[in-house]
Amino acid sequence: MYTIKRLLGYARRYWYLTILTVVCMVGGVALGLVFPKILQLIIDRCIVPGRADLIPRYLLILSGLVVLKALMGFGQGYSASRVALRTMYDIRNRLFDHIQRLSFSYHDEAETGQLISRSTTDVDALRQFLGDGISNLVGNTLIFAGVLPLCLLMNWRLALLALSTMPVLAVAVIRYGRTMRPLYTAAQDQHGRMTTTIQQNLMGIRVVKAFAREDYEIKKLDSVAWELLERRMATARVSAFYGPMLDFIAALGTAFILWYGGTQVVQHRLTLGQFVQFSSYVGMLIWPVRMTGFVVDVTQNAIASGERVFEILDTHPETHLRDGNIELEECEGRVEFRNVSFGYGDGNRVLNNINLVVEPGEMVALVGRSGAGKSTIINLIPRFYDATDGTILIDGRDIREYKLSSLRRHIGIVSQEPFLFSDTIRGNIAYARPDADLDEVIEAAKAANIHDFIESLPEGYDTWVGERGVNLSGGQKQRIAIARALLMNPPILILDDSTSSVDTETEALIQKALATLMESRTTFVIAMRVSTVHRADKIVVLDKGRIVECGRHEELLARGGIYQEIYRLQLGGHELNADNPEHQSIKS
Image (cartoon, rainbow, N blue to C red; front, top):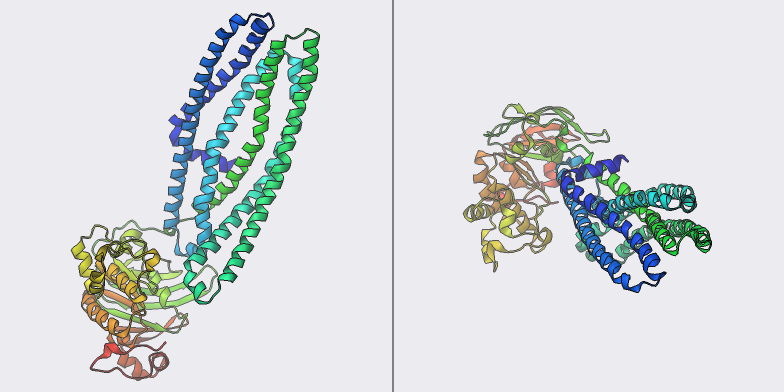
């Protein structure tokens, strides 16, 4: 019930629509209770005595009640649907908002397909419960509460006989609910796995085709989809068994009425009209019984889906560690690491006792073997993760004291694998600053050496790049990502191997533009080119999560340490061409 109560809490804000729904329900049920009485009058006062002239009068009354009941039904259906749809709108937006604020560590472990499934299929299951499920539950309860006293007043012996099957029915419903809930949970989990499989395939479709693995992917989806089919069939088998069983139990009550009630009519203890009226009321009692299976089905599905949705909503967002309350307004760009260590959830230390001071405007190149901790260091600066031990300071203040949003507004990032949204080129460049005018976008594009290419396109800056920038080359996407970061004009710039996807000629032009733009910025670069490390004010050499060397290119080469080894193995083992250093690149 906790899940149901929590779900209803979201619908509480639409109390006025809920009241309208209940009023229409009560009105519809009250009008429905009048119909059997009119049938009894028509039979006993018109048909049996042979007074056909009175039938039109009752039919006119009956027609008016039908119209009123239809209006009540419309009001109930519309208002109930509106409550359900608006509540699902709120929950889906709340869920998406929460997912946006979850930590990087959460997204590192979460499957995208599961998140998509919970945001769509599970939320829709909640909508079905709030709409059809609760409407049937409340409506049928009202019918039962209204019909039962009338049946007892008319003939209490016949009423008790009709209700004799209710205890058996109650036991069957309870067992049905307990059986269905875990089955629905398993099916929803498997649906999430299938969504993940499809999502990964579509995102990696180029790799699939490049390695001719279409048949493998088809078989993989077939296996996952078959497992989902079996789990859905398990729920279908249980429903197929319990549904007819519930109908059979209800039909027993009807059989008892026909036997005992028919005898009462033959013995003239009941009029034919009264028997029809009573049978109609019992039929109204049977309807809630027949719908019990549907209500239980929808409710258990909603509980399973609600638990999956609330599991995400109950996960602490990334600011739960300690979000600051200081707005970072003017940032000079001084960054300091004091005894910083970091480990992921498994307890494995990735960084150990990092101490580093970077003055405003300095360019720092991070160098090291794969897994040395280069990416982890730059991920700690914008608080994608928080340091396990130690402190990171910007302008002399612990970054955890700053508001997270204001901190990240002062940090421009170009990742190793640039991501572009399915939008125009202009929209992608201006993503961080949607209020930027076209001139500012063009200026950033020129600085990233992508303006001429954009101008050569038929639609220029309004060109649609396609999903994930599929219509652009790797180097073009990289330069658009660089332009996006430059448009922010951040005092701190992070380049995660941002020129790895461009040729040496294009890189030379980008490096010239960046050389001017980085004069007033604190820049961290994960270096994969000789030209990058040669120009750095500091080269930080990492090994197994520790800083083992720090200095300029010439100094580190002269020491003959790890940097010299990396230089010879990864940087080609040659010195820079003094006339054109930008054209030297790493041999990967």
